[in-house]
Amino acid sequence: MTYEEGLTLLHKHVKNESLIKHCIAAGIIMRALAKKFNEDEENWELTGLLHDLDWEETQSTPEKHSLVAVEYLKQTDCPPEIIEAIRIHNHNHGLEPKTLLEKAIYCAEELTGLIVASALVQPDKKLASVKAESVLKKFKVPSFAKGVNREIILKCKEFLGIELEELIKIELVAMQARPAEVGL
Image (cartoon, rainbow, N blue to C red; front, side, top):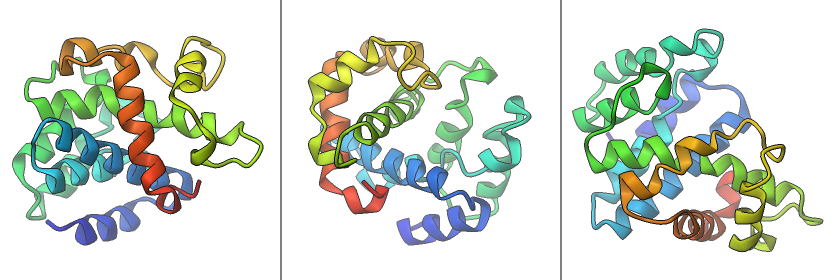
């Protein structure tokens, strides 16, 4: 499956522009993480792009989230390792990620929400104005972007062997390099 095919599939199942931008941002940060770990950048970006493919259908039944997406993806030529990473990323299933790809999407995609919120409080509402130190400070304020699950993000040390500060820098720089795609 190509990125373009993934984007078409995303638009078929997701209508909310904010959610589409979140999925694109997740793809962007996953590509950056793939580069850091010398992994397949296209597959990792596709994993991020498609991870919330079924969110609009399953948001009222979180236990079904990612499982519906898996069924959609099984009908495509999406690689099995991507499908499995998407299935496991829903922490409500209680599944432990095993591969590096699974661990990365599990703990890293959540941080995009905090980065976007950090941009939206800037006077110009641009990612370019956001500093990693500022995101780190906001991370420590539970009331800021309170929907962001900080416990999952903090698994970056255990799962990826990188500190929170480094994860923030990797994701922020990656998103800043492609601001138009996430609308910031």
